[in-house]
Length: 286
Image 1 (tube, rainbow, N blue to C red):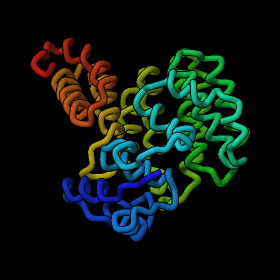
Image 2 (image 1 turned 90 degrees about the vertical axis):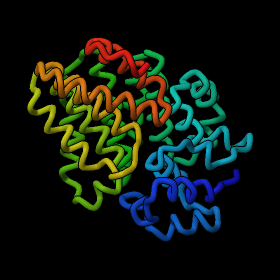
Image 3 (image 1 turned 180 degrees about the horizontal axis):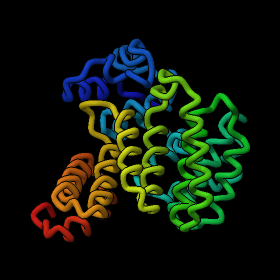
Protein backbone atom coordinates (compact mmCIF):
# COMPACT_ATOMS: atom_id res chain seq x y z
CA UNK A 1 0.00 0.00 0.00
CA UNK A 2 1.34 3.41 -1.00
CA UNK A 3 0.03 6.58 0.69
CA UNK A 4 0.30 9.86 -1.20
CA UNK A 5 0.44 12.61 1.42
CA UNK A 6 0.93 15.18 -1.31
CA UNK A 7 -2.70 14.67 -2.36
CA UNK A 8 -3.85 15.58 1.15
CA UNK A 9 -1.64 18.67 1.18
CA UNK A 10 -2.76 19.86 -2.26
CA UNK A 11 -6.44 19.44 -1.42
CA UNK A 12 -6.01 21.15 1.96
CA UNK A 13 -4.27 24.12 0.35
CA UNK A 14 -6.93 24.22 -2.37
CA UNK A 15 -9.56 24.63 0.36
CA UNK A 16 -7.38 27.20 2.18
CA UNK A 17 -7.49 25.43 5.52
CA UNK A 18 -4.67 24.84 7.97
CA UNK A 19 -3.34 21.51 9.21
CA UNK A 20 -4.85 22.34 12.59
CA UNK A 21 -8.31 22.92 11.07
CA UNK A 22 -8.07 19.67 9.12
CA UNK A 23 -7.01 17.64 12.15
CA UNK A 24 -9.48 19.16 14.63
CA UNK A 25 -11.58 16.44 16.26
CA UNK A 26 -9.78 13.69 14.31
CA UNK A 27 -6.13 13.58 15.36
CA UNK A 28 -3.19 15.71 16.47
CA UNK A 29 -1.95 18.29 13.97
CA UNK A 30 1.47 16.62 13.96
CA UNK A 31 -0.06 13.51 12.37
CA UNK A 32 -1.28 15.59 9.42
CA UNK A 33 2.17 17.17 9.10
CA UNK A 34 3.82 13.76 9.12
CA UNK A 35 1.32 12.44 6.58
CA UNK A 36 1.98 15.30 4.17
CA UNK A 37 5.76 15.22 4.47
CA UNK A 38 6.53 11.53 5.05
CA UNK A 39 3.50 9.70 3.59
CA UNK A 40 2.98 8.05 6.98
CA UNK A 41 -0.25 7.53 8.92
CA UNK A 42 -0.78 5.61 12.16
CA UNK A 43 -4.41 4.67 11.48
CA UNK A 44 -6.39 4.09 8.30
CA UNK A 45 -9.52 5.17 10.18
CA UNK A 46 -7.90 8.57 10.78
CA UNK A 47 -6.97 8.77 7.10
CA UNK A 48 -10.56 7.98 6.12
CA UNK A 49 -11.88 10.78 8.33
CA UNK A 50 -9.34 13.23 6.88
CA UNK A 51 -10.41 12.29 3.36
CA UNK A 52 -14.09 12.71 4.29
CA UNK A 53 -13.36 16.15 5.71
CA UNK A 54 -11.56 17.10 2.49
CA UNK A 55 -14.35 15.61 0.35
CA UNK A 56 -11.99 13.31 -1.52
CA UNK A 57 -11.99 9.54 -1.93
CA UNK A 58 -9.60 7.32 -0.03
CA UNK A 59 -8.60 5.81 -3.37
CA UNK A 60 -7.26 9.24 -4.40
CA UNK A 61 -4.72 9.03 -1.57
CA UNK A 62 -4.00 5.31 -1.30
CA UNK A 63 -2.70 2.92 -3.94
CA UNK A 64 -3.95 -0.53 -2.96
CA UNK A 65 -2.12 -3.80 -3.45
CA UNK A 66 -4.08 -7.02 -4.03
CA UNK A 67 -3.69 -7.90 -0.35
CA UNK A 68 -4.88 -4.46 0.74
CA UNK A 69 -8.03 -4.88 -1.35
CA UNK A 70 -9.17 -7.49 1.17
CA UNK A 71 -9.07 -5.07 4.12
CA UNK A 72 -11.98 -3.64 6.11
CA UNK A 73 -10.81 -0.20 5.04
CA UNK A 74 -11.32 -1.13 1.39
CA UNK A 75 -14.78 -2.52 2.20
CA UNK A 76 -15.67 0.84 3.81
CA UNK A 77 -14.57 2.61 0.64
CA UNK A 78 -16.83 0.39 -1.48
CA UNK A 79 -19.73 1.07 0.90
CA UNK A 80 -19.24 4.82 0.63
CA UNK A 81 -19.55 4.41 -3.15
CA UNK A 82 -22.69 2.24 -2.73
CA UNK A 83 -20.94 -0.74 -4.33
CA UNK A 84 -22.67 -3.25 -2.07
CA UNK A 85 -22.31 -6.36 -4.22
CA UNK A 86 -18.57 -5.85 -4.63
CA UNK A 87 -18.19 -5.32 -0.89
CA UNK A 88 -20.22 -8.43 -0.14
CA UNK A 89 -18.10 -10.51 -2.50
CA UNK A 90 -15.01 -9.59 -0.47
CA UNK A 91 -16.40 -9.79 3.06
CA UNK A 92 -18.36 -13.04 2.61
CA UNK A 93 -15.22 -15.12 1.99
CA UNK A 94 -14.63 -17.18 5.20
CA UNK A 95 -10.87 -16.57 5.08
CA UNK A 96 -11.49 -12.82 5.21
CA UNK A 97 -12.91 -12.89 8.74
CA UNK A 98 -10.42 -15.56 9.85
CA UNK A 99 -7.48 -13.23 9.15
CA UNK A 100 -8.91 -10.29 11.12
CA UNK A 101 -7.60 -9.31 14.56
CA UNK A 102 -10.13 -9.92 17.35
CA UNK A 103 -10.60 -6.20 18.03
CA UNK A 104 -11.94 -5.67 14.47
CA UNK A 105 -14.71 -8.29 14.61
CA UNK A 106 -17.30 -5.72 15.74
CA UNK A 107 -16.41 -3.51 12.77
CA UNK A 108 -16.56 -6.56 10.47
CA UNK A 109 -20.17 -7.25 11.51
CA UNK A 110 -21.06 -3.54 11.27
CA UNK A 111 -19.85 -3.36 7.67
CA UNK A 112 -21.52 -6.67 6.82
CA UNK A 113 -24.75 -5.29 8.29
CA UNK A 114 -24.45 -2.12 6.21
CA UNK A 115 -23.91 -4.22 3.09
CA UNK A 116 -26.98 -6.37 3.75
CA UNK A 117 -29.01 -3.25 4.54
CA UNK A 118 -27.92 -1.69 1.24
CA UNK A 119 -29.01 -4.88 -0.54
CA UNK A 120 -32.39 -4.75 1.29
CA UNK A 121 -31.71 -7.96 3.23
CA UNK A 122 -33.21 -6.72 6.49
CA UNK A 123 -33.01 -9.88 8.60
CA UNK A 124 -29.38 -10.48 7.69
CA UNK A 125 -28.57 -6.82 8.37
CA UNK A 126 -30.13 -6.91 11.85
CA UNK A 127 -28.35 -10.19 12.63
CA UNK A 128 -24.93 -8.76 11.77
CA UNK A 129 -25.58 -5.47 13.56
CA UNK A 130 -26.59 -7.31 16.73
CA UNK A 131 -23.38 -9.33 16.46
CA UNK A 132 -21.50 -6.03 16.10
CA UNK A 133 -23.15 -4.79 19.29
CA UNK A 134 -22.07 -7.92 21.13
CA UNK A 135 -18.44 -7.70 20.02
CA UNK A 136 -17.96 -3.92 20.50
CA UNK A 137 -15.91 -3.10 23.59
CA UNK A 138 -16.75 -0.17 25.93
CA UNK A 139 -13.73 1.68 24.53
CA UNK A 140 -15.03 1.49 20.97
CA UNK A 141 -17.41 4.42 21.40
CA UNK A 142 -17.31 5.64 17.80
CA UNK A 143 -17.98 2.14 16.53
CA UNK A 144 -20.86 1.71 18.98
CA UNK A 145 -22.44 4.96 17.75
CA UNK A 146 -22.06 3.77 14.15
CA UNK A 147 -23.72 0.46 15.02
CA UNK A 148 -26.67 2.12 16.80
CA UNK A 149 -27.15 4.60 13.98
CA UNK A 150 -27.15 1.88 11.33
CA UNK A 151 -29.53 -0.29 13.35
CA UNK A 152 -31.90 2.65 13.74
CA UNK A 153 -31.80 3.21 9.97
CA UNK A 154 -32.79 -0.42 9.38
CA UNK A 155 -35.69 -0.21 11.83
CA UNK A 156 -36.89 3.08 10.32
CA UNK A 157 -36.80 1.54 6.83
CA UNK A 158 -38.87 -1.36 8.15
CA UNK A 159 -41.27 1.06 9.89
CA UNK A 160 -40.45 -0.56 13.22
CA UNK A 161 -40.47 2.76 15.01
CA UNK A 162 -40.54 1.37 18.53
CA UNK A 163 -37.21 -0.39 18.06
CA UNK A 164 -35.82 2.65 16.23
CA UNK A 165 -36.73 4.95 19.14
CA UNK A 166 -35.07 2.62 21.65
CA UNK A 167 -31.84 2.44 19.63
CA UNK A 168 -31.67 6.21 19.09
CA UNK A 169 -32.37 6.89 22.77
CA UNK A 170 -29.47 4.60 23.72
CA UNK A 171 -27.14 6.32 21.26
CA UNK A 172 -28.01 9.82 22.48
CA UNK A 173 -27.51 8.68 26.08
CA UNK A 174 -24.03 7.50 25.09
CA UNK A 175 -23.24 10.85 23.45
CA UNK A 176 -24.50 12.75 26.50
CA UNK A 177 -22.39 10.56 28.79
CA UNK A 178 -19.23 11.50 26.90
CA UNK A 179 -17.56 14.83 27.56
CA UNK A 180 -17.42 17.38 24.73
CA UNK A 181 -13.81 16.65 23.76
CA UNK A 182 -14.59 12.96 23.34
CA UNK A 183 -17.72 13.53 21.25
CA UNK A 184 -15.79 15.88 18.96
CA UNK A 185 -13.29 13.09 18.48
CA UNK A 186 -16.13 11.13 16.86
CA UNK A 187 -17.95 13.85 14.85
CA UNK A 188 -19.21 11.75 11.95
CA UNK A 189 -20.77 9.16 14.27
CA UNK A 190 -22.51 11.89 16.30
CA UNK A 191 -23.83 13.52 13.12
CA UNK A 192 -25.21 10.18 11.97
CA UNK A 193 -27.01 9.58 15.28
CA UNK A 194 -28.63 13.02 15.31
CA UNK A 195 -29.66 12.65 11.66
CA UNK A 196 -31.44 9.40 12.52
CA UNK A 197 -33.05 11.10 15.52
CA UNK A 198 -34.27 13.97 13.33
CA UNK A 199 -35.65 11.56 10.74
CA UNK A 200 -37.52 9.63 13.42
CA UNK A 201 -38.90 12.84 14.96
CA UNK A 202 -40.12 13.93 11.52
CA UNK A 203 -41.93 10.60 11.07
CA UNK A 204 -43.54 11.17 14.48
CA UNK A 205 -44.64 14.67 13.30
CA UNK A 206 -42.43 16.22 15.97
CA UNK A 207 -41.06 18.78 13.52
CA UNK A 208 -39.71 21.22 16.07
CA UNK A 209 -37.81 18.41 17.78
CA UNK A 210 -36.54 17.23 14.39
CA UNK A 211 -35.09 20.67 13.64
CA UNK A 212 -33.44 20.72 17.07
CA UNK A 213 -31.78 17.38 16.32
CA UNK A 214 -30.53 18.80 13.02
CA UNK A 215 -29.06 21.71 14.93
CA UNK A 216 -27.28 19.20 17.17
CA UNK A 217 -25.96 17.42 14.08
CA UNK A 218 -24.59 20.66 12.59
CA UNK A 219 -22.49 21.21 15.74
CA UNK A 220 -20.35 18.25 14.73
CA UNK A 221 -19.96 19.14 11.04
CA UNK A 222 -16.54 20.71 10.29
CA UNK A 223 -16.72 24.32 9.18
CA UNK A 224 -15.69 25.38 5.67
CA UNK A 225 -15.40 21.77 4.46
CA UNK A 226 -18.01 20.20 2.22
CA UNK A 227 -18.96 16.56 2.76
CA UNK A 228 -21.94 14.22 2.49
CA UNK A 229 -23.06 14.99 6.07
CA UNK A 230 -23.85 18.58 5.08
CA UNK A 231 -25.82 17.33 2.08
CA UNK A 232 -27.84 14.91 4.24
CA UNK A 233 -28.58 17.60 6.83
CA UNK A 234 -29.83 20.07 4.22
CA UNK A 235 -31.83 17.37 2.43
CA UNK A 236 -33.57 16.32 5.64
CA UNK A 237 -34.17 19.94 6.62
CA UNK A 238 -35.86 20.46 3.26
CA UNK A 239 -38.19 17.53 3.92
CA UNK A 240 -39.02 18.81 7.41
CA UNK A 241 -39.70 22.34 6.11
CA UNK A 242 -41.87 20.85 3.37
CA UNK A 243 -43.91 18.97 6.00
CA UNK A 244 -44.34 22.32 7.79
CA UNK A 245 -45.46 23.91 4.46
CA UNK A 246 -42.52 26.32 4.55
CA UNK A 247 -42.18 26.13 0.79
CA UNK A 248 -39.53 28.82 0.26
CA UNK A 249 -37.25 27.46 2.99
CA UNK A 250 -37.68 23.85 1.90
CA UNK A 251 -36.90 24.73 -1.72
CA UNK A 252 -33.74 26.55 -0.63
CA UNK A 253 -32.60 23.53 1.40
CA UNK A 254 -33.21 21.13 -1.50
CA UNK A 255 -31.31 23.34 -3.97
CA UNK A 256 -28.36 23.63 -1.58
CA UNK A 257 -28.37 19.89 -0.91
CA UNK A 258 -28.45 19.05 -4.63
CA UNK A 259 -25.71 21.54 -5.52
CA UNK A 260 -23.46 20.24 -2.75
CA UNK A 261 -24.13 16.60 -3.70
CA UNK A 262 -23.15 17.46 -7.26
CA UNK A 263 -19.96 19.14 -6.02
CA UNK A 264 -18.83 16.06 -4.08
CA UNK A 265 -19.98 13.74 -6.88
CA UNK A 266 -22.55 11.70 -4.93
CA UNK A 267 -24.91 10.55 -7.70
CA UNK A 268 -27.14 8.55 -5.32
CA UNK A 269 -27.86 11.57 -3.12
CA UNK A 270 -28.51 13.68 -6.23
CA UNK A 271 -31.06 11.12 -7.45
CA UNK A 272 -32.75 11.08 -4.03
CA UNK A 273 -33.13 14.89 -4.05
CA UNK A 274 -34.41 15.29 -7.64
CA UNK A 275 -38.09 14.37 -6.92
CA UNK A 276 -38.26 17.08 -4.25
CA UNK A 277 -36.83 19.69 -6.62
CA UNK A 278 -39.42 18.70 -9.22
CA UNK A 279 -42.09 19.12 -6.56
CA UNK A 280 -40.91 22.73 -6.33
CA UNK A 281 -40.80 23.02 -10.16
CA UNK A 282 -37.03 23.41 -10.09
CA UNK A 283 -35.67 21.76 -13.25
CA UNK A 284 -32.72 23.91 -14.27
CA UNK A 285 -30.24 22.07 -12.03
CA UNK A 286 -30.48 18.75 -13.90
